[in-house]
Length: 341
Image (cartoon, rainbow, N blue to C red):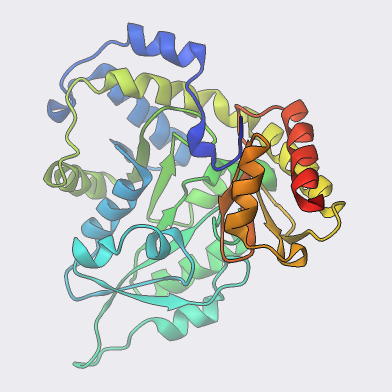
């Protein structure tokens, strides 16, 4: 099977498996796991933040950020199709007691003026704006890169109104690779940032949140409250360290394969791209085939290619480390076969 559902399906490399076996460990709740400590210090340096914290998942990292920044009854501003709003089970309401106020974006990017107009003024009837959340790359915008300039403008708007900014940077290294800039260029226009180690970077588990020392001190307690205090976590931090230091430099391969896949799909009668890929996500529209995305995905699976639905007529493909260029060509052939039939 050629699995293009998500970059979350990547398997750990042989080097990661060896590192897991040999990892020096301790009790991370006591901050005594040397491998976790090294991972957190390395992540903070790479992201240009004072401190970092190893967490179990991107969703947990985002929720810890909201819990740390906000108080119950506040309001969170975010793009209307962002992951925190769309795919995290309403956790900001269930856990943090905050409500969301969504802003329509363009390719995932919010207009700074729209953000400014959404920030609440002082009024007894209004909730306070507690946090602004960005997402880069933006999943439902097809892996679109939010430009550094847009992030800077939103950040400056937030700072002028004393509102913190959190970045869901699950695929931030994909954005940096596509834009050809250091990841710090994106991270510097945030107060806090979350990055996934288990997507394109290929680690088996885990994410990082990073910010100021004070933020991480409070975030560490929230991680404990959520049951995320881990013991000999160096075993899973070790592959994360390899992901962070070595795997980020090969993300261009995935993005190259996404372009090949996109060009192949464009050449198939009845199919078109919902948007041209900027990173490693390709979204195809099957409306012209008179078939639903669900039926298309089922037929494609019978041809040996696994994909995912992204709406009634949209199909998502995600390139990653475990899918090579020759498999992309085979996937295009399978897609063409399904489309023809």
